[in-house]
Amino acid sequence: MSIYDFGVRSADGKKVSLNEFRGKVLLIVNTASKCGFTPQLKELQLLHDTYKDQGFAVLGFPSDQFMNQEFDDIQETLDFCQTNYGVTFPIFAKIQVKGENAHPLFKFLTGSKQGFLTKEIKWNFTKFLINRQGFVVKRYAPQTKPPKVKKNLEALL
Image (cartoon, rainbow, N blue to C red; front, side, top):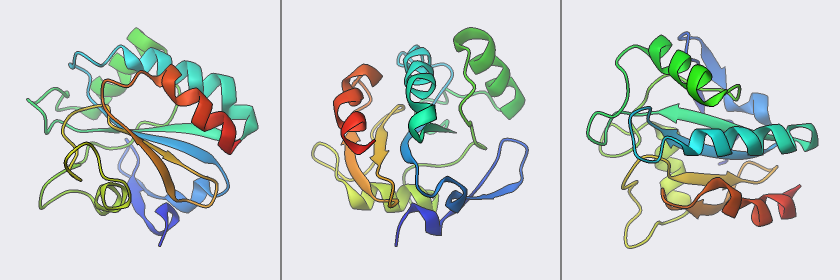
């Protein structure tokens, strides 16, 4: 099983197979618009812009499971990310990333790489680096700034 076996919903509610990203190196991030780590969106966008022509993409998954730090309306989330941080990488529909009702993609991600002390996601902006075969190769804590991902990312490109 790889991430290509999962489907998600786009921000406009359409089904999207992650198979559409087959062969790319990905950084999957659970995001939130009203979090202390939200300024990482600018750095994530910079990574996306720098490496997209080499087969890389950032995929953002908004979640409000951590102190309700995401807008209720996905359009408000998209507008906020674009206006304040210039985000052009894909932002998907809001999902649950932990607990019993976690999206199967995030169950797979957290089952593939344990975080510090636990498998469960502890906060917004947990990052998963995915290789071209669709497997998790590295998990980063929320406080890990996107530039710290570059060395591992470049090794996969």
